[in-house]
Length: 80
Image 1 (cartoon, helix red, strand yellow):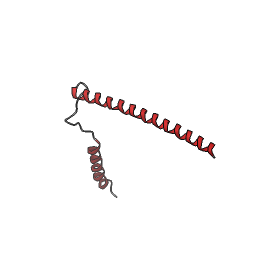
Image 2 (tube, helix red, strand yellow):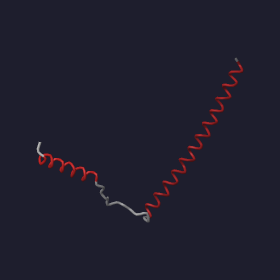
Image 3 (tube, helix red, strand yellow):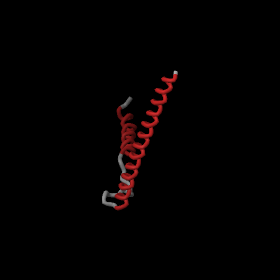
Image 4 (cartoon, one colour):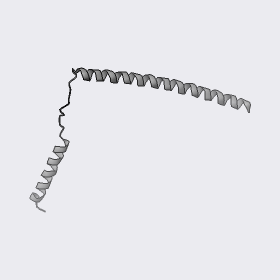
């Protein structure tokens, strides 16, 4: 094969890869000083706090159920 016959497809593939992989800037980008962005961050922080509280409640309930199961197994073993 000739080097020149491989050059054109290789350059084309490199150009296509560069066009696909190059980051583009969107028109809707906002800065950190935008009030809507700040409100969105506050809402996300509240949601994360709620999720953490809910997870703590779930863990507490699972611990309570696990303790009840442990006691039930203990009593059922004594009854045999």
